[in-house]
Amino acid sequence: MIEVGKVCMKIAGRDAGKICVIIKKIDNVMVMIDGETRRRKCNVNHLEILKQSVDIKEDASNSEVVKALKSINIEVAEKKETKSKETQRPRKVKKSNKSKPTKKVIQPKDIKKEAKAE
Image 1 (tube, helix red, strand yellow):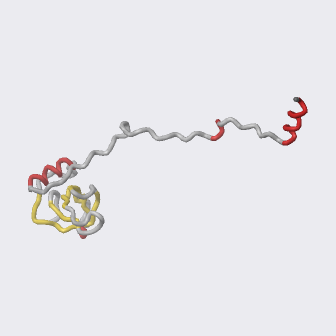
Image 2 (cartoon, helix red, strand yellow):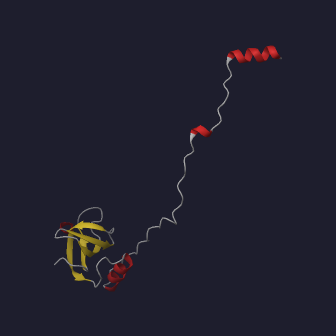
C-alpha cells in the first residue's frame, strides 16, 4: 500500500490539506514526501493515501514530482532551488573595538596648565 509514487494528502501539521507524493520509503512508519508540501520526512499516520499514483523514480527531484502531478491534473507550483554557497552574499564581518583610536580625556589639571601657558 505504501510505495513510491503514491499520491497522498497531508492531514496533520502545518502542511495539512496539501497534496504530496511519496518519493522514498524509509521504513514501515516513515516516508519522504514532496509536492505542494515541503520536501521532508513524514509519518505515514499523518498521510491520507489517495487512489491515484504517478510514475516517478525513488528520490525524484521537485521538478519531476511537479511534472508527474501535472500529468494527473493536479496543479503544483515548482519550488526554487536553494542558492549554492558560491552565489550567496557574503556575511558581514564585525570590526573589533581595538582598532578605534582612543580619545584623550582632558582632566581638570590639564585645563589649568593650558590656561597658564597662554
